[in-house]
Figure 1 (cartoon, protein in one colour):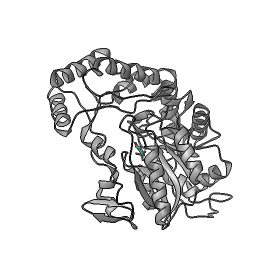
Figure 2 (cartoon, rainbow, N blue to C red):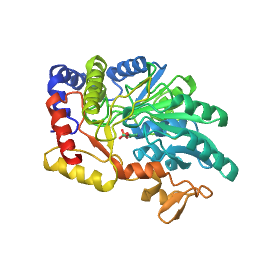
Figure 3 (cartoon, protein in one colour):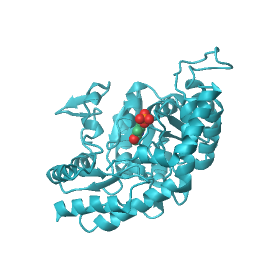
Figure 4 (cartoon, protein in one colour):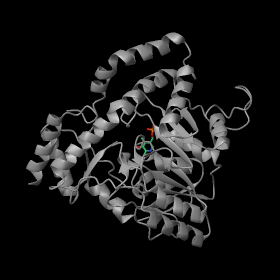
Length: 388
Ligand SMILES: *Cc1c(COP(=O)(O)O)cnc(C)c1O
């Protein structure tokens, strides 16, 4: 059994996919070919925003957003403590300071009460300016944007939606990557919509930021390619990957997103009486980047993972370490290390207990649009056998 069966997906899409890839290769327009522009239009239309700019990966997409906003030294950027490293990594890369915020036990997403507490602590300490909140749509579930927007408005924060895992999710029918002032996604192969390599995209309704991102992603270009008006990056999506994504986006919108929701519901039906299954709030829909259950403690989690492995069932721990315990953040300027816990001076109470506890208890199960009912039964029976 595969954790996310990309080979099976290729078999299903093979005819269309081979044609799209060969066409891109034969065209000779390998960088910024017509497929890139077409895809950007399709992505913007799907999400429901004015501008989509593709780039080399989801991490660069976050960096491009911070650059467009001029985030730098002295700026505080609030990041959930339970996420993939990139969400926070891009902040010190721009010279700004990440401030870690705890998450909700039920949704795995940023805890808005703790966000407000963290903003107030930064303000009362008076060393950093609160500028941005990175709201992550973890495991495919959009964050609580209504509540985040209220806090952001109150304190003048910009919302950067990290939709690397959230593409396709919705709140009351409105699609992920449309909630942030700027939103980003990733086309890493295992994400809800993945290419055959690295890729990413930035979304915004704002004309000025879109123009800046268009410049930053191509060496800070001005009027033309060899007119360079700012220090930028080389961060484009290859034409071949855009061709791959055109085929994948169609399959995703036509049936894959529905199929993965059906598979996730089957897991929940079969497991909810025996283990803590994912909770999707009313009005929300997930794109199920992961199906993540919660065990009682790390011993039970590790035991279950070993038992599944013995039966040939892959599972993953997303994520084993909260951001504030990552070694790299010990080296971030403005942060102090103490007992291995790195916090902004003055934020000593901020140990993110929920995120830390989740890291010990979570386990993500095999999930993809092509998972069969028999495979779901195999996984659930194995889990029931261990936990009974
Ligand atoms: C995967 C991921 C990223 C980074 O995307 P890449 O394309 O791998 O650079 C950023 N944030 C989150 C939450 C992710 O899961």
